[in-house]
Image (tube, rainbow, N blue to C red; front, side):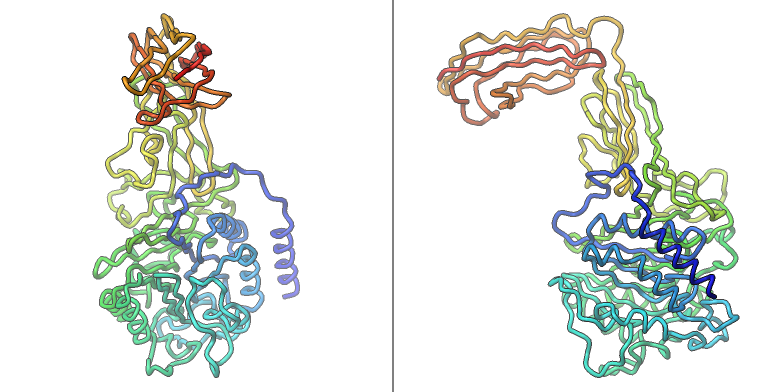
Length: 579
């Protein structure tokens, strides 16, 4: 036991003292942080003492904290067993949230209760094993100092986190079931760590029956969800075990076969919970227990999100990756005008994304760029060597597998540094949050004008770029480029005068930029486009904008540029403007 404690101390010391790696960090992450609505983070299966948990979990915490979420929720299984040492160590892993002022609230997993000596953890409530077989005392004591309603300390000071202080007379200790209201969203935390909701009622903290007369969690859930729905709130439920297992069971780890409440989807608590969720207007359920990423829709089309990739070894003996739901990451959740928007965000080693595709593209040609990310997993035999950043699809070589609709797509976005050179070819169902001029999630771009640019892929805060050249044809780019503006330009609003300021004759398509500058600052861009071969005349009416006011008198520079994959052609002239 002493050697085990020394190992834990060494691990924490290495975690807290190791120098930060210099990875490629995106200034503009994808998915973007919503400008107005609160952003939430969810994940589960932290299992920090699994083979790679000590590497994966810190990355999940640090990357999700970069988003500055309103709060973080977890679905449980913090470690292998609910000892004081293991739970306290998990608590240390969460310290970056405390330092950043980010509230976090976990549910209870079956491995969060302390199993008796010599007995495998997490079996309480399964089959003939009673729910009280494992102890909840260490959990209650380790987390008693957390803010209410999770622990007994003073609530968080965020005014959006509505809620009263801990009721007088309530027994001390962390809670197994509780409610957190944040703005217009109600989060309801349930305890089904006994492989059941109803069987867990006998070991709740605080215990039932409560002062409102609830005899168990189902009644308590109905009351809390119904009152929130009637008041117009969005209702989310967080618990550990799902009601269904949408995975292809042929590839499931034997321990994780049909990994649902009661180890059977026919178990009475599974349909009962789905009925209550539908009846009370629950908008989404957030789960873990399965070590991987999946989702399904149950009664009333309520979505159930399984996010078990925060640290534990993946629950599979077969294929891994995007097409099978086995990878590591966390989920972003936001509510916009009552609509729930979620993104499954993978994690990578620093600088771990590789971008593949052509370095040279012909004008008019389509080119697809593909991205792969190396996850911080080194010991798990089921590790994902390179996670493909694309939508999942049914592998042609496998006749039946996990339904594609049950597989989340890893969050990513491809961006062109210059859409006049390389423009996105977006599908009809592309992400509405993207910049349609420069971005597409499918990585497909069309070569436009000859030139040089960069393709960037971003997933979470990790990003990488690739230099791309759209190739010109042999021969000249332009036959002539002239600034034709007179040395003196007289401007009048009425009658409107338009002066010819530039004339170009292009031998082939090129990026053309014509602008008016004063004291090193652009006051009007007259033309910036991928222009076709031929003659081009550019006029200026003296306005700052197309319908704006006239510029003031003084000296201005008319500048013409023709850009391609060769040296830029520049022409300019200083003119004096009078009114």
